[in-house]
Amino acid sequence: MTEWIGDTFTSDTGWNHLERLVDVGDRMAGSDGERAAAEATRDALAEYADDAWLDEFEIQGWERGRSEIEAGDTEQDCIALPRSPAGDVSGEFVDLGYGLPSDFEEHDIEGKVVMVASNVPDYFDRFIHRREKYYYAVEGGAAAFVFRNHVEGCLPPTGSVGNADAPIGDIPAVGVSKEVGSRLSRRFDGDDVSVSVDAETPDATSQNVHATLGPDTTEELLVTSHVDAHDIAEGAMDNGAGTAMVVELARTLAEREEELDTKVHFVAFGAEEVGLVGSEYDAAKRDHDDIEAVLNFDGVVRGRTLSFTTHGFDALADAAERVGERFGHPVTTTPELGPHSDHWPYTQWGVPGYHVMSETGDEGRGWGHTFADTLDKLEARDFREQAILLTDLAVDLASDEFAVAHASPADIASQLEDEDKAKGMKITGDWPYDE
Image 1: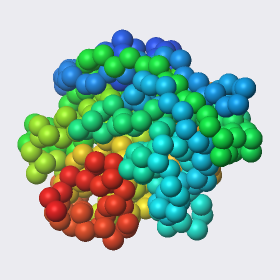
Image 2: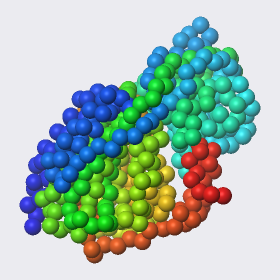
Image 3: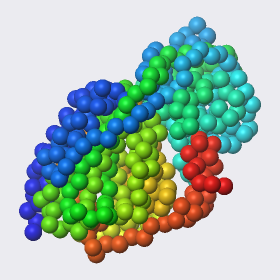
Image 4: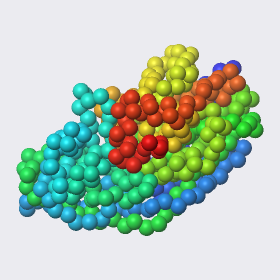
C-alpha cells in the first residue's frame, strides 16, 4: 500500500501548522506566545491521536530589555543572550578569536570584556558550544561576554546562558553581528568598553504537549520536538518545522496505525532554548526502560537531505540508512554523541535516541538563532519529502521486528570522554554522572 505516500506529499497539515506557529509571534519559554503555540499543537495532535494534553512545569523566566555596548564615543548594536543577568560593567576589550579552550588558557581575562566567535576552526576536532565558551569566560573572571556571529548579514546571534543549578548566568552576555564584532576588534581591542544589559527575571510557567497513538503497550517510541523559540524571530527553522513535523507524523501514523506494534508517544517540549528544561522535566518522571527510542526533530527542513545523529547506536543508523535506500533519498548518519537538544535528557542515561536535522551546507546554525530564522527560508517540498521518510522510519521503529539495546550510563559517559566532550559539559554544569 503506497497511497499514504501520495497523501503525505500533497498534505497541508504539517505546513499549515508551521505557518500557525510562526504567526504566533514571540514563543520564548514561559511567554504567552509559547503557551498559545503549545495549545495550538495540542489541538492539532488531538485531531489524530487517541488523547492529547498539556503538562505544566515552573521555570525561571527571562524577559528582554535594552542592551548596548559603549566603545569610545560610539554605541555598538547588540542583543542580550537569554538568561544573561542584568548589569552594567566595564573593562578592557579582548578579542579571543574562536574562543577555544587554549585561547582562554593563554590570556589573562580577569575583569575584561571578552569576545569570541560563534564557530570553531576546521582544524579543531569538535564543536564548542556557546555555553562552554561562556563558562570559560566566567571561570577566568571576565566582566562580560560578547558572542560574535560568524555569519554575514548584520545578524547578532542569540542563545541562552545559565544552567540547571543557576538558571541566570554569572556575567552579562550579549550577541553581536559579525560586522559589529569586526569593528569592535579593529577599533577597540585593548580599550575600555562598557556593556549594559537590562532584563527581567520573573517566575514563569512552561508546558510540554503530549499525545499518544497506537497499541496500548508499556513500551513507547517517543517522537519529539520543541515548541518554544527565541524571541527575536519567527522560529521557523528552530523549531517550528520540527513541531510541525510531529503534527504531520501524527496524521500519517494515524493512517498506518494498524502497522504499529508499539505505542507512539508524541511530545512537543517547552523551554528547550533555555537549557532543555521541558525534556529534563519529562525524562525525570519516566521509566527509561519503557522507551524503545527517541526520534527527535530539531533542525529538519532547513535543507533537503536528512541527517541523523545516532549516538553510537548502530541499529538506529542502520534503520535510517534503510529508509533512505528504500526511497532513493540520500541521508547522512553521524555516530557521535550530540549532547544538545531534547533527545539528550534520555540518551545521556542510555536510551537510544536520534537527533534528526538536515544538511544546509552552512557552518554552524546558519540563519538559526538570528532575526533571519523566518518561514521564507523553508520549502514545502522538503517538508513533505522528509515527512515521508520519517513516517516510514517511525513505523519501522515501532515494529516488533526492530530492536535496539539500551546503553549503560557508564558507556555514555565513557564515550563523552573519548569524544572530548566531557570537559565542556563539566564546566557548563551539564555533567550528570558521579565521578
